[in-house]
Image 1 (tube, rainbow, N blue to C red):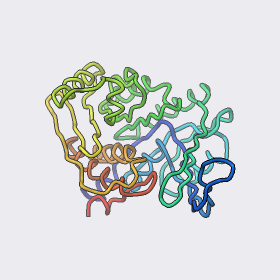
Image 2 (cartoon, rainbow, N blue to C red):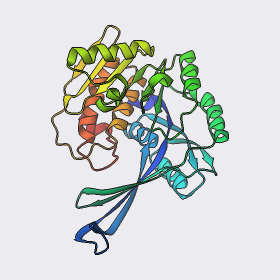
Image 3 (cartoon, rainbow, N blue to C red):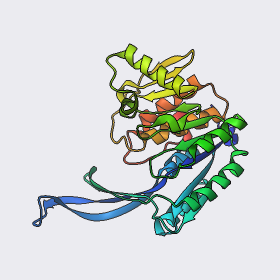
Length: 307
């Protein structure tokens, strides 16, 4: 893979963008008010989360990344906009004055996450319809579409998006959420992890049973591929005439948050260069192995991945 090919690759990411906030500090005593540690916050940090983290990972590799999402008309929404600009991501944000931007606040002490606080609202239908109009405009200028579903309401028109992308022959990659996968019908690839797939197909007894259930789901939903991310067991790609298992990279796992974002981002960027999916999966697997060695939602660069 060369930087010139990636620089021409165009990926559109849409879905639930969020702001990841981190408060770092020391925890050296227990509160006299309740049996909980007292964290003295000494530093704070903001990072792109959710669909915005997928877009960031694509941009970090050197591909052309566009994020289409609905955020609140608030301070957190403006922070996302500033971070997107700083990372070189083309921002197509719809501001909804009736909803808060989704924020995940993590308090970290001694490199250990102590608590996470979530702030969120579902976007209004009016904002989502404007967002859909913009989607149709942006879709004509993209090589691969990523739909990043975090269950926050940003993809309520997902069926129309899949239909539009299929009509143009644009590959559609989806990071799924919840137990109703019927809304993903017709996608090119979905990328559930083991617990997400188990929610939908039930508990499998062995590898043959897993294969049967995964392929049945893939056929039922008219998917070209199902990519199962398996943590320490690597990944398995299920297709009509394909089954490829890639072993996990042997690295110390420090933090798995955002690893799924990195995997789908790298997969999308590689496919946008025209790489065969089997090779793209191997590179995405390597990227996942690198990113779990970092704290919090993180991204990896071209040099980290290919050198």
